[in-house]
Length: 454
Image 1 (cartoon, helix red, strand yellow):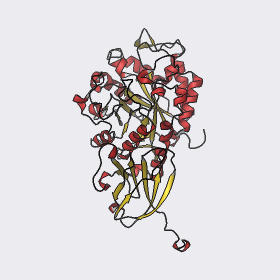
Image 2 (cartoon, helix red, strand yellow):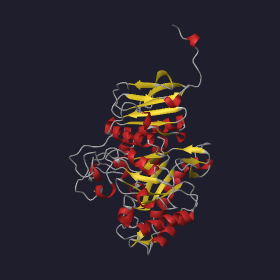
Image 3 (tube, rainbow, N blue to C red):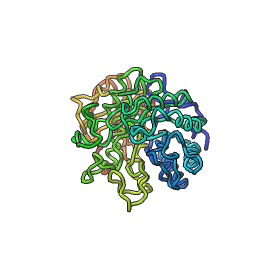
Image 4 (tube, rainbow, N blue to C red):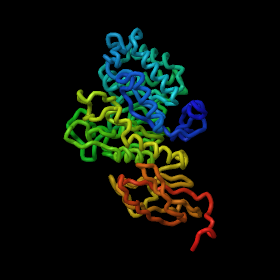
């Protein structure tokens, strides 16, 4: 790898002093993750390299995957993870763990962090397969095996409520932190919940993940196994509200959406007559979360998370594309524009600034999200609604205004705006969508007026 391509060489990945963002050494780290739950189970080494290199080139820096999704877990070669389905007896005779080792090393060589779940909580822990009797033995195996890897973020849970087996989850988190105090640990929760609901005060939890989930505003109660509205409340598609809620907790910890609506997954998951979430939807979830103060974002695609590889076999949640096609889909390729935008303005110095919106904030798709710092302001509209702003915080400054197309990442210059007053911006109509990003930045120097012809 060339100089500067491997983030952990700049210093360990850590939480900033204000408890809001991440850094590698002294350099800000915008966490852009991709969901690859069954990576170790469904791909061979050649396929794993294709996937990882594709994501690396698209700007992703964290890949999320789990070691064991079910107690009888096997890999593509047919080798088992466990002997007799017992987590206390990892099967080291076959190729399963050797294959995991090779993929983990492959990610390191490509400069990618891995967000790893030792087990998938909703199946392996909730069922009692991993329990207080065998959790220490299994975690010792896992932690010893990957102790020296510089590119691991540990994730407890796995699409499961924290109170489903709180004692086991706490034990896992504590063992992870004891093994490597400098390594980040978090928890992946059940749909429409956050790790903060159960573990915010735990010393081992370095940052919060929430799962905004895959339902529309109107899909409140579907009489399905994953209904949980009565327990945790209901934010609908308003992913930014999860960020707002978690950033209001003490002590301050970074937060990000660990599972928003996946690209090309059924809306609501269960009914195949329903439409799919697509690229415009995953953009909306991402911009809403980041402009609310999230420290990063995790993208997902239905076909990639399960590595759907055979159209003769019915995929989960209406999967219709092979993973080899899905890695080229537009939503996944567009996440890099948000990452680059945040790095361009110095996002770690910013804060949510919804109070800058004039003439009434909108609801649902009319919501205008605003994120600002001392020398910049970013505003996002989903449906092309005009953006009216108070620029009182920029009094005495001249701002350069641009539109950014979140599909292409291209910036188009609008002009200069004087800070201190009010301004209204009407997003241009586009052929590739209705969402738009307004970018205001302090002008570095005044233009040469004598060069401008009257």
